[in-house]
Length: 351
Image 1 (tube, helix red, strand yellow):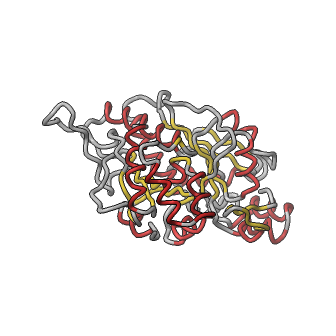
Image 2: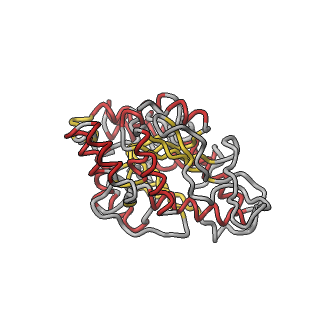
C-alpha cells in the first residue's frame, strides 16, 4: 500500500504504506515498491486507526483533558510507535494472502488493499506514519465510497452505522483482553448468518412469535432463498480471491478460509442457509450450526482473525475466549439493546 497524497490526515482516508499490496511491476530501481491496485479491481478494507493500533491511552487523554492536551501528547510521543490493535493480525494476514496471489498472478490487481481511515488532527499523522513504518474530524463515508470499500472496520459505532446505511459492509471492532494466537499464513474469517450474511427475516419471526414458530417458518420456507445481509458482498469478495487459488490447483492450500458460525440448528433450520449460499454461488469452507450453544468455545478452536455477529451477546462471548470479534449493528436484534457503556452497544438476547 502507498500513502495517498494528502495535506493531512484530518477527515481523509489514507492508504497505509505497508509496501506490499500493489501489483508487481518491473522496478526502475531495486527499492521501488509496487503501486496499489485500482479501487475498482481490489478488495478494499477500510480500517480506522483506533482498531489497527492500540490508542486507548490517547483516547482517554482526549476524553478527560481535551483536544489541546491530546495533540500535545501525540506530538511529544510521535517517535514512539503505537502497539498493535485488534485489527493488526487481520491486516497482516491480508498481506500474506497478497504475497501468494502476486506469485500466482503477477499482473493482477485483484488483491486486498487496506485503507487507513482517520479523523485525527494533522499533527497525529506523523505518529501514524512512523507507526506504520515501524510495523511495516469528518465522517469517512464519502472516502469509503470513493475507494469502493468492501469492508469498513472502526471502533466508532456511529460511523459504522453510517456506513451500513450507505450500503457499505461495516462492523464495530472490539479488543479482547487477551488475544488468541492466530495463523500468520492463512486468513480465517468467521461469519454469523442471520442479519450478517443473510437478512434478518427469520430473526424477526423468532422475536415476534418464539422458537416454535421460527422452526415452522424455516421448514415451510426451506426452498425459499434468504435475502442478503450487510456482509454478503464481503464474503463474495473473499470467494472471488479464493477461486484464483483454486484455478491454480491450490484448493487445499488456499490461504483464505471462511466459516459460518450460526446459532441455527443443522437439522431444523440449517438447510435454508446452505441452499441460499449455494444459490449465490458462494462456498463456505466450514458451516458450524451451534443450535443455540455459545459460540466462544468453537471460535477459540477455529482461531479466526476476525468474527462478525449482529448481537453483542455473541461478540462479548467470543472476545472472552480471545477472538477478535466485530459487532454488525443491523436488523431486528438491535431493538433489544439494553445499555450503552463506553460507546459499546450490548444486547442481552442471544441468537
